[in-house]
Image 1 (tube, rainbow, N blue to C red):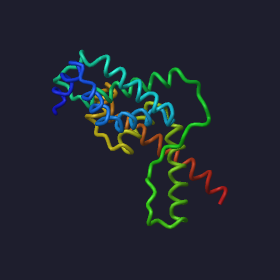
Image 2 (cartoon, one colour):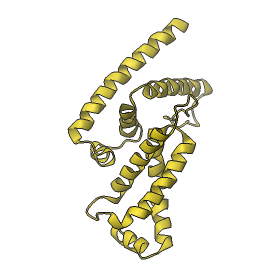
Image 3 (tube, one colour):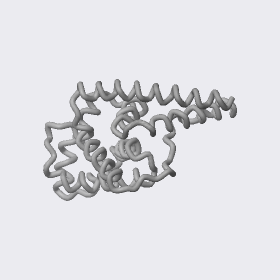
Image 4 (tube, rainbow, N blue to C red):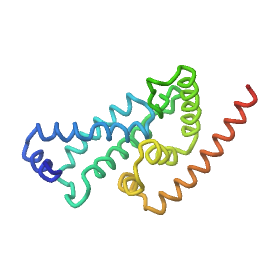
Length: 184
């Protein structure tokens, strides 16, 4: 079923069609929310809110636009709303950046986990807009066109922000490596 057919079926009251839409996109919507929020519970709630907004806004969907990008834009903005609503908390979940490899020795896994924690902390210290772009572009492997559609930023603006974010991240990592070397 094409996106257009799926939307028409949903608008006609077909609940199975909406379930199918949710199944097809739930992982990506959650990923966008998690990339912004860095908190599993909030990301799940934001993803649910996203699908509610999608359902309520479906009649306004422009069939010329890519459904996936339209939904991700809603997810991105919903997650940003959550950030605006919440009070900052120190107990944010650390993003899992490298999936554990079953063939990996335990010392290698610990080293990878340590590096992931350092990288995650460095990304967390970036300004929020830069952190989101870094996560979506590098960790979720979204391209610039997808980022344009999700964030509403222009192609050149995204490239400039990614460039700045990489420079800031590099500075954060350099600072963290200097801190670590004093303890070794």
